[in-house]
Amino acid sequence: MDFGLGAESEAFRAEVAAFLDEHLTPRVRERVRRSGSMHDWPLHRALAERGWLAAGWPKEYGGQGRSPLELMAMREELKKRHAPTEGMGMTMLVARTILATGTERMRAEVIPRAINGEILICLGYTEPQGGSDVASARTRADRDGDGWVVNGQKVFTTLAEEAHYVFLLTRTNTEVAKHRGLTVFLVPMDTPGIEVHPIRTLGGERTNTVHYTDVRVPDSARVGAVDGGWDVLMTALTHERSGIGDDSRLLHELVRAARDTGAAHSASIDDPVVRDRLARLAIDVEVAKLLGRRSCWIEATGGTPTVESSMHKLFHAESRVRFSAVMLDLLGPQGLREVGDPRAVAGGAFVEEFRHAVIMPIWGGSSEVQRRIIAERGLGLPRSP
Image 1 (tube, rainbow, N blue to C red):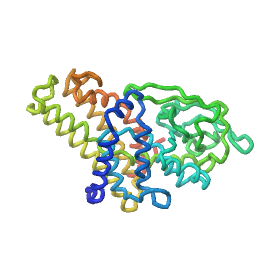
Image 2: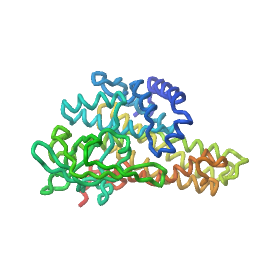
Image 3: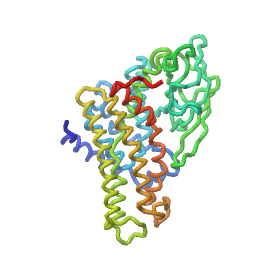
């Protein structure tokens, strides 16, 4: 396979870079940092005006019909700039899932508004007792006439405070295997009975716990079949795992810091041990990028990179943890200076990365889940009990 993205993709990357030069200003970054939200409405709407929220969608659905390779170029550039696009990512993965499994009415009501940057959709998967085992969901949806009544609690529902809808995983059948008794609904966040409470994370971001108390949901809000939520969820998770871009930004910052011979930190490019560790980090960054591009290539050639996406997610997440630990080890105490400290290396980006990286093996499907997918679907090993 060819790991290059091609001339058209690189031209699109340049267009995205120019857009970010104009719109991703220091003021936007500071606003995002203070809010703890990886979302900015003016930037989101500017992306929508360019048609980039659905850049890879078919033109008949309001997209631009760009290739998976062009999308990879865009994702790499957004990631490299640390653009606050979490709302874009979640909303469009749900919109793509609705396109595949939703009703005609739902598609007509939700997809145009998502593409136009008018709404956000958050993910209601994780529960306090379940962790990364989303199939153990206990949030109940019970039939009541022509609709449903939902009761339960979700945690780590990022952007629930901004979202217009929640893509909500519920338990509708307790008499079958846990994977078979799930149903997904698309529920407006202003529905009576929904309460959002903030959680501040170690990484400085805001997420939420959301309580559902006698929330009445019409059957028209159901996505997919009753008790068919696991299949819907797998469609969504494939889109989520394929959305990781390039992570070279901090490596370049670290090399730049090591070349600064007058700095107070302990990382010096003249030290062979430092050069060796930087080289190992560079290898990890390159391998993660190439694993992502392999998934992209499979998609571009008509395949579905289920196992390959899991390989990418697993390596990317665990290498980020290694990277952040080595990074602070090299810099010493100076690497712990926070954003706002004029003496902070790279403006405090390194300590922020260290705090954020610890969640990566859990976010978007835990490392345990990714290993299980690779073992069972990729290597044909027996299903774990």
